[in-house]
Amino acid sequence: MTRARGLTDAAGPMRPRALLLLLATTGCVGFNPVSVKHWYPPPDTDTQQLCTGERATRCTDQALALIEPTATQKEPDRAARLLGAACEQGDDRACKTLDTRFTAPKRLNPLPNDIGHGLPHASTSYGEVACTVTVEGEAIKCRGIRNGGYNASYIDALLRNRFTPAKLDGQPFESEYIERYVIQGD
Image 1 (cartoon, helix red, strand yellow):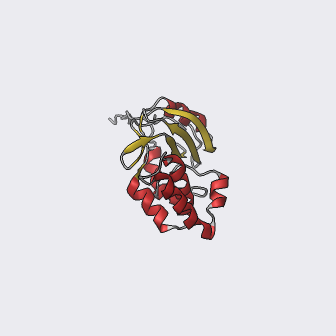
Image 2 (cartoon, rainbow, N blue to C red):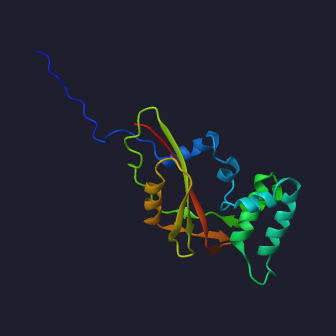
Image 3 (cartoon, rainbow, N blue to C red):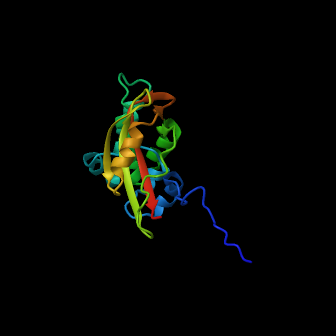
């Protein structure tokens, strides 16, 4: 006599976490590999154009002036955006400054695993959302940068999350945090 055995999957369908898939984003069309390697808040179009080509070194000089110890009022967020734009253009001094003096905001809690559940098999969704992270570690003023179809879900999760703030030389400052996501179909 043969007995039929039921196979159960107590864990439900396996879904790779968006955080683990961040490693693959450097090969994804539309993701900026420089911003994945070096943290900086997203520079606006004017800043990117200001720092294009040979002007990148001037942007680095301007940024360093904004954060030097003798500056009457430091502007770490503006400096990080200028350095990011210069780093995108290949200015090594800008990239090294970002890596040695700045610390990126960090999400403290994981995101829900069910975001994007039900995406058709063999489908993939790429997106980016940005939130301003306050010195107290709260996300505010979230917006979509690249719509992967789940920006609203990610924004909702980020607004409920806690963060460590961005830091310049160990001192916290308010700045933008970008969550990049890649979701693959069930």
